[in-house]
Length: 150
Length: 52
Image 1 (tube, rainbow over the protein chains, first blue to last red):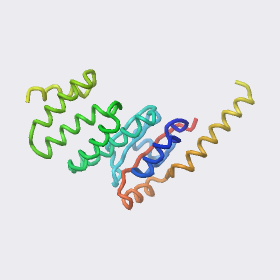
Image 2: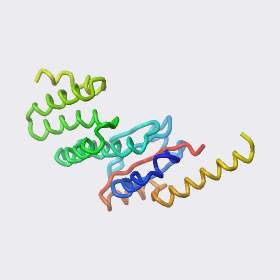
Image 3: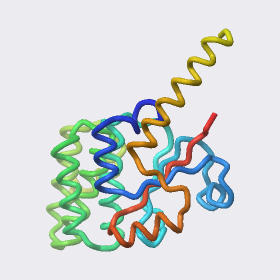
């Protein structure tokens, strides 16, 4: 990450604009233990109160890191029940990074946000249909499988 | 790997780290990062890494 992803110009610009970055060695005391870090690189997204909402372990290319961070941002808003804000971030992710590893989870979460904000289950069915069409092998397609019956 | 190329690789890593440090303002204190997060209304990205 330090040699490839973090020096990338798009990543630098994204991080400067969207997150507060903090780097810690894998054996940092007490935070590595507090966050149960067992392997690196471990990227953990926290809200302003310090609560964890999203985590990845392992290398991410620049093309994967940015959508992963967008997903983390959306998960914070989802967990805080700000579904409109989460939907905006998820739409940005899916528009700019539709082929990324974060995209299937973003589609799943977009469906849940749509349902939570409107109470219309159609959003869940649409999420499944999109996943089945574009990401048939994704674990998120399997998780959305029951929504096909809606 | 001989000593010379090992030194060269080490130097290259330092150059990259220096460039990265210039570009991204990494915090090293969580309380300071959270304080900035509240002021700037942004999430915190924690990178646990192995310095090697």
